[in-house]
Every structure is written in C-alpha cells, then in structure tokens.
Amino acid sequence: MIASKKVAFYTLGCKLNFSETSTIARNFEGEGFQRVDFSEEADIYVINTCSVTENADKRFKTIVKQAQKANPKAFVAAVGCYAQLKPQELADVDGVDLVLGATEKFKITDYLNDLSKNDFGEVHSCEIEDADFYVGSYSIGDRTRAFLKVQDGCDYKCTYCTIPLARGISRSDTLENVLQNAADISAQGIKEIVLTGVNIGDYGKGEFGNKKHEHTFLELVKALDKVEGIERLRISSIEPNLLKNETIDFVSKSKTFVPHFHIPLQSGSNEILKLMRRRYMRELYIERVAKIREVMPNACIGVDVIVGFPGETDERFLETYHFLNELDISYLHVFTYSERDNTPAAEMDGVVPMKVRNKRSKMLRGLSVKKRRAFYESQLGAMHTVLFEGENKEGYIHGFTENYVKVKAPWNPALVNTLSEITLTEIDTDGLVRFKKAPKLSSAMVG
Image 1 (cartoon, rainbow, N blue to C red):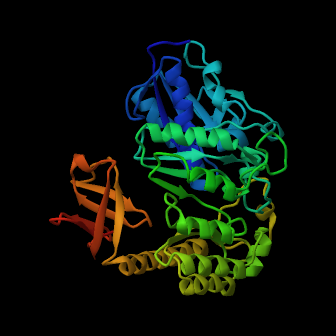
Image 2 (image 1 turned 60 degrees about the horizontal axis):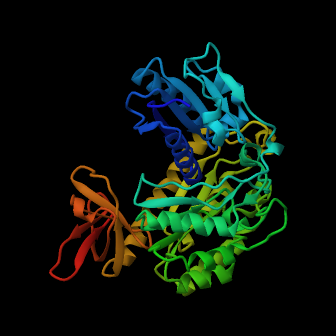
C-alpha cells in the first residue's frame, strides 16, 4: 500500500459517525498512513458525511474547499450517509475524487492507488439492501470518552427520516464483540464510554445475521456493567418505547451507568406523532420521564424535538411548547424540519413556511436555555464527580459530571482525563459551573 503518506479526517453528524471515522482512521494507520489534523497538509482527506439536516449537506462543499486550500493536489474522498444517498451529487463537487457508499466505506484503502487526483469523482455505492452486515466501530484517542457502536441501521419508518435509506436494516454487534471492544477501550485509559448506534434500544436484532433478537438491550447493559476498568458508561439517544422500566431501574443501581438519558420526543402533539409514524404517544413519554425521576431524582434528561413538520399548526406547536415547558426535563436538542428526498413527509400537505419554522425553533431553543438553567440550579450544593477533558479553552478546562452538568476550572493539564469529586457552588456568567479548589474538596461553578 502507500507508505509514509498523511491522511486527515472530517466528521459531520452524530456520535455514530465519530466512532466509524475513528475505526476507518485506524485502518489507514494499519496501512502505514500518518493521521494529521484536517487543517494541516495531507495527501488524502476523508470526509464522513451526514444527511440528517439540510445544513449538513450544504457544509460538504465548504469542507472540500478547506481540504483543497490546505493541499490543492490532495486526494479527497467522501463516505457516510450523504455519500450513500446522493453519491453522484457528491462526486460532481469540484475536487472530489472518490465517493463510497454504506458497504464500501470500511474498505476505503482498497480503493486507493497512487492518490493522484481523478478527472471525475469515482463512485462505488451499493443498493441499500446490500448493507445487511455489521462492522464494529469505536472512537479512541480523540477524547477522554469513547463512542462505542453497538448497533446500526433502523427498521422504523418515520416519515421524515432518511437513515434507513442511508444505513439499511437494523443489525447489531455480537455481545461478545461489544464486551471485547469495551475492554480494549478501557485498557487505553479512557474513563467513559458512550453507547451509540442508530436505534440502540433495538440492540440484539440481527446479532448473528438473522432478524430475531439474540440478546436484549437490558442484557447488553447488564453485561457491560461487569466489564472491569470502565469508570463510566453513558447511554446515548434511545427511543422512549424501547427504554423499558427494567433498564431504568438497573441504571439507577448500576456502578458504572450514569444518570443521563437522551430520549427523542420529536413532537408533543399526538396528531403530529401519528403523521411522523412514531411508535408512541405523548402519554408514554410522560411515563418514562416520571419513572426516571422516581428512581433518579438528579438524572439529566435530554429531549430531541422537531419543529415545523408538515401539519404543525400554531395550535399543535403550542401543544408541544406547553408539553415541554411542564415536563421535568433538562435540555432540548431542537431540529428545524427540512424536506428530504424520498421521504413521505416531503409530499405531505400543510407545509410550514420556513420563517415560521425558524421562529418556532428560536422559541424552543429559548425554552432549552431556561430548562438547562433550572436543572443546573437544582444541582447547586450537590456533590458530583466530574471527568475533565483535554482541551484548553481560553484558559479553562471543561468537564461533565455524571449527570451531565458542564463545569469549568482554570486550565490545569494535570486534571485532563481525571475524575474529581466536586461540589457545585454557583452558576457563572456564561452558564458554566466554575471549579474552585478547596482544602479537602474541590468545588465548582455550574455552567
């Protein structure tokens, strides 16, 4: 293969993409490549794309230009969801040499010759039905926490979503391999593992290439809790209908799983949930939040919500707003609905003007600020454990408590990747909790 060459990566989108980029990078390193930062001069730039939002699509051209600016002669390759959905569109972007679909991205080094630029973007993509096998992934070396992929694809048919078209059917890593990957991560000194996938609550389906569940998500959680050396395990986004009470109860008693849940809602209107073809109604969501609060009063609960979906009248939006305002949750991730090709929602009546979508998004983002502030205030005076990260941000080091309160302290490299007991004492002007040293106990300001 090509020795002594430099490769750089840029990742758009979700935690799952980060885990896969890291695995692809390790494949390059195994072939003799040196990994460098994307801002540096490299021989090949690999862009892992996302197609969840319109904005991610538009950013691709900008990123390609960044690569060309760093090295006009560099080979540019695109992988990921957007590369599977619209490979020719990416191949037509000036400067792009190679586009790989869902089944080819992990074999990218097989498609490289002398890295000379192509006259036209070369495409190797598959029919998404062919994406029926599983490739394990995890991120390591970039952060103080690792993203561990346990599941891929989705069998749900939400009317706004292109992920099943980009990633294929729901399938899972074997329990044995997940546990081995977790042990490997732990052996590298990483303190926290975040479980990730497209629909992780569906874990176990397709574990050995069949559609039945060999294991459940709860069995996965229980097995991971026994892996030696892991300080923290965090569950990323999980569907409310798949987050069972038994799992919530287990996390509340776990030695490693932290009290933090991110649960997609998408709308507080049952009528909109039906149009979206979600697999629950708002009443189930209320039950899940109540159950978490019952057994983990200090848990952090994050919510995904989409504004401006077709049919979202003023009344239905206000239904969502008031629902979230009254719900005991900690923060929101707000997505402005954007039409995606080949989805049923793109053909629906009741299109909401973009100006209205943006206004509603702004309202919910404001509500999120209010919710996060209230959650942080509820934690003042409480003792928590913070894991400090490795970046110096304007003279401060940042970290997260087990229940996802973001804190900051004056930069001290000795704190990087350490767990420190703190007491949250005050919220700083930027919303972060400042960290102060006490004689026996570190104290911090909430952020």
